[in-house]
Length: 200
Ligand code: ITT
Image (cartoon, rainbow, N blue to C red; front, side):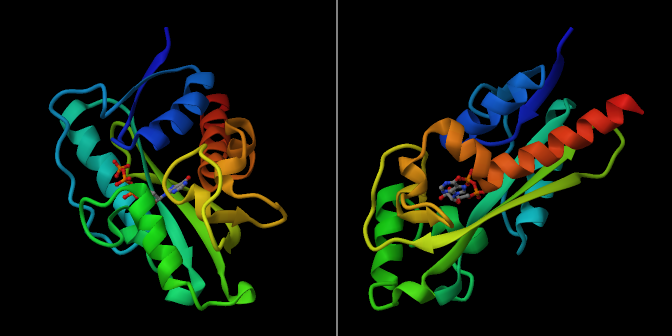
């Protein structure tokens, strides 16, 4: 019988990317988009790890099912690390993904190429019965483009050029994004740990 897992996110882009990987691991997955009675979670921690742990623990406490949460964002060096943990709320509530990355491009309009360095970071937190949250991390380095390009992925993907690539993250296939992305890397760390705990 497959093992149940709740993916504690309501972000459709994340659900798609995470489900593709954890379903392959043999989990019977549900996200907050499938569940009624999901708690509201105030993301008030100042690190990706802190917010991921809070999301996973809060959802686990309500449903009692092993839970994986993702907190992630874009860290831009020329903006002293912004938007960082505020990536989903950058520019204020109610903006679309497009309005948010347009604001970012506007803020960086006078920043020269060599200073446009940035990275996506992801912290995954996994909670199951009787354990504190376990954290898995992933990062991808890159640069912010001057204009958006591509329509795959979500969020800031159209304006992020991964290091050693000539295109934005939104121009990569799902398969190629998974191989190099912050989330793909964190998920592989989670998978490795799971295999080790099963083998013990
Ligand atoms: P949940 O809390 O429900 O998971 P959220 O969108 O609010 O959804 P976060 O607080 O972790 O999640 O914010 C992450 C934001 O960072 C996300 O909304 C995107 O704007 C951006 N982001 C994270 N991963 C990304 C990716 O792979 N590609 C593009 N943008 C990404």
